[in-house]
Image 1 (cartoon, one colour):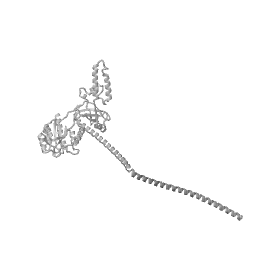
Image 2 (tube, one colour):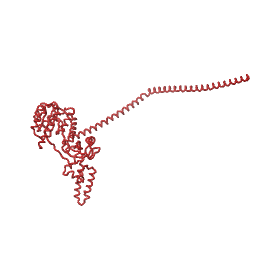
Image 3 (cartoon, rainbow, N blue to C red):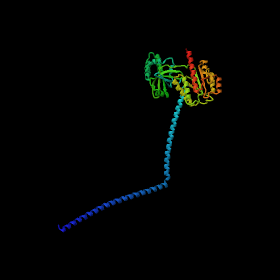
Length: 453
């Protein structure tokens, strides 16, 4: 190859290299220009953002300054108004809540007072508030019923006769329901109605009246139990329909019955036999004890045991060393008496008398033929009883803690009280009361048993 050709090839190579270099510079320049443009644009946006934020801060500061200078009082007044409104609303809600609580307390106190008034007045009622013992599986339980017996019970006709008029069998084991009694009455009434028996209208009228009387007697032969005793009967004793019970009125009246139905408000008990009255037996002992100062449950125990032993009444006496007895304690003692009466199945309610001042006790002692005064230095009780005779009633007197004063003992002895000794040891008030009552009750029972032989 010649020298001229080699030179031409070198020139071509240099031209190609120069063209490639020019294109590389152009591309690099375009990339650099693009990057610079993007960087400048980002920088401008950053600067604009800072400027906007600065402008906003300046405007907010100027607005705040303007508000503080012109509207500062109005803004805070509005905020205080809203705060006071919320506070007033909470106060009204709290006051309304307290008012509801006060009304509930008033209703509760009213119901409680009605309950205690009914408890105080049930003994004053001539017919009494009938109570009952439940006789299921030869075990007795006690309750209260607040409905009087039908006046037909004391008439000339027996309940069996009224049942027979309606075509019912009173000896049936399961008591008749209200629907069965009404059905029997309607059938007999339609059969004996005067309009149906035009042939003998006068006899039909007499028969119809007899059917009406029998229906009223049988229908009214139901005792209603409700209140606390209803709850105790159904929830505690778990008594149900057809369970047998015994009703008593606290004055010797006794009758057997059977639970007929139970609903949400009370229990209906069907009377199964004629009521009969059991007269008090033996000496009626009236206990006068100064137990007003006893603490804890000692007074409750005294009253409870006097009830179980058969005392006719218990009266707290106010002496020089036992001056007061609180009213709430008297109410509690009445509840104790009622529970003890039902527990020991007494047919005659023991009376818990109001507190009696000592001076009013002296006429009672003077009128009693048997009046025993518990004293430390006296003749033993058994010696006194061996020389005494049975009377209809007697008085037992026990002093307070610290005993009676000498003047009080002197006045009672002058009124006719017999001092008696209860043993060599010093006894508490409740112990002396129960010891004295137990001894005279056993003596009374022995004398009555001997007289019956």
